[in-house]
Image 1 (cartoon, rainbow, N blue to C red):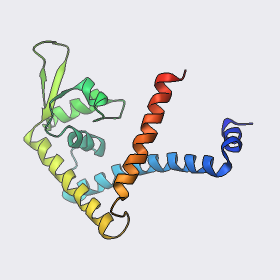
Image 2 (cartoon, helix red, strand yellow; image 1 turned 60 degrees about the vertical axis):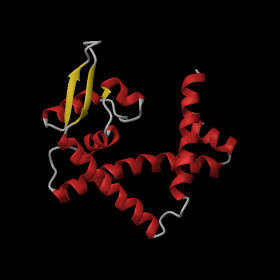
Image 3 (cartoon, helix red, strand yellow; image 1 turned 45 degrees about the vertical axis):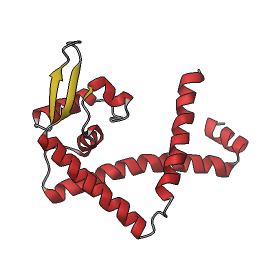
Image 4 (cartoon, rainbow, N blue to C red; image 1 turned 30 degrees about the vertical axis):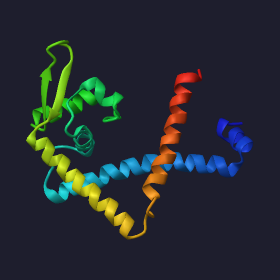
Length: 165
């Protein structure tokens, strides 16, 4: 008997199915977001960077951070942060500077070109948020309710990593 089928019986098949469907949906939504960004970039002729790199620029915003802080602050979720930072610096979207205190540490911040991409992303997200609300995809409290639930899931999973071996 698989773990899923035994858990499904213990929790009730509907709850397990809903949980697995939710996991799959979160993954699909992330991939779809990357496709939406890629599509926007193709429409505007911005082909120099990819959607993951654009999200990194968007999340950094006006902050100046170290590469290590990108993950700890939640700005970047991927595994190849060094590669993407290098590409963004080479393409002129980010400045990087060695820390005076710890020469191993590099601080990064957006260039004017990086801020332009961030503004493009911000406009895209604003159009989507307004459009979803206007068309009834989400109600007045829709995004807040989803965010609240997802934060609780995040907290639960974090607790599982920290406290259960």
